Amino acid sequence: MSLHIIIDGYNLIRQSKSLRHLDNQSIELGRDALIDSLSAYKRLKPHNITVVFDGIQSPYLAPTRDRIKGIRIQFSRNGESADRVIKQMARTEKEKALVVSSDRDVVQSCEAYGAATISADSFEIKIGMAAQMQGIAVESDEQTGWKPTTKKKGPSKRLPRKKRRNKRKIRKL
Image (cartoon, rainbow, N blue to C red; front, side, top):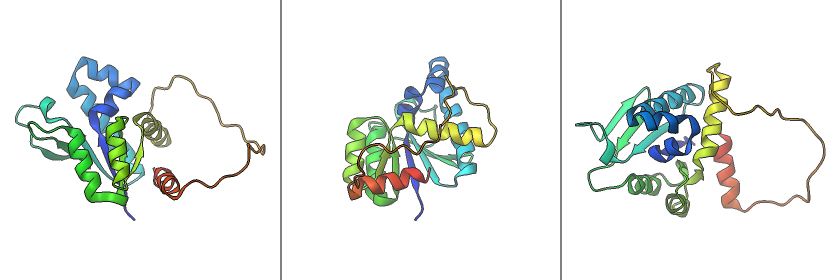
């Protein structure tokens, strides 16, 4: 099953520490940096990636749909929000979609349609790990290594089917 990652563009940019700084300088710098990091991620994991931005802040005379470095870019139409476009895409993609957003309304709606969701912070961590695997320098506050242990934590409990399905999709990242 092919995974289609649908990203709430400005939500991810404004949740990210490094991208937020670029976005404060210029909105185009933030968008370009996001697209660059996503294209590096796409080289490692060839999922379909669509980034949805609000059309109000789109470049002058920009097309509503475009493809840059293998990443599909979509601006919402005038009078339509990016959240609505994301919800419509999740409704059509259903089980195949993984929505990246920290907006509670978007997350709840997309989960109701059967799409898996991940927060913008968690997805940024996944992108960072992919960039490090490719040798691209990524800023990080501190490096804490994983320490192997055999210590078990509490009784095992099987997650509900919906959460297990969501975890499987996130593991593919």
